Amino acid sequence: MAHRHDEPLRAGGRQGPVVWDETGPRSFVWRGRRYVVCAVLASWQERRAWWREVGDQPGGGPPDTERRVWRVEACPPSGTTGVFDLGRDDDHWLLLRAHD
Image (tube, rainbow, N blue to C red):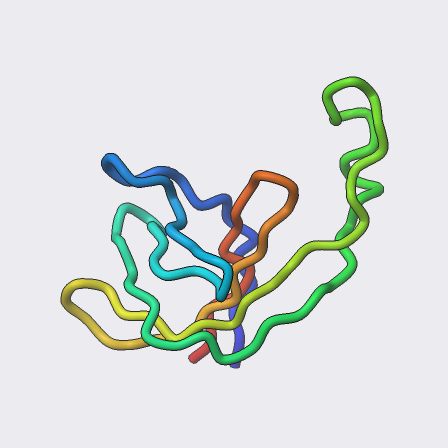
């Protein structure tokens, strides 16, 4: 079962909220804990609810209509490995879903 969160990922320490390279996310901070990505399980594009953001864009331009999503297997420093969907909108990272 997946739990939808749609939470912005916030910076943690000297690194940003998400450390990533051309293959995808390598680690991310969620609720104050850094998770290390063990594997990228899938990646895709999905449409976003852009109509909720009309007028919120700097310069008044239309927002992007799609986001890139990575499904990753990740583990905090101490705890159980989980599966998470991370999304990137423009320069914003979100934790979209956490899977049981």
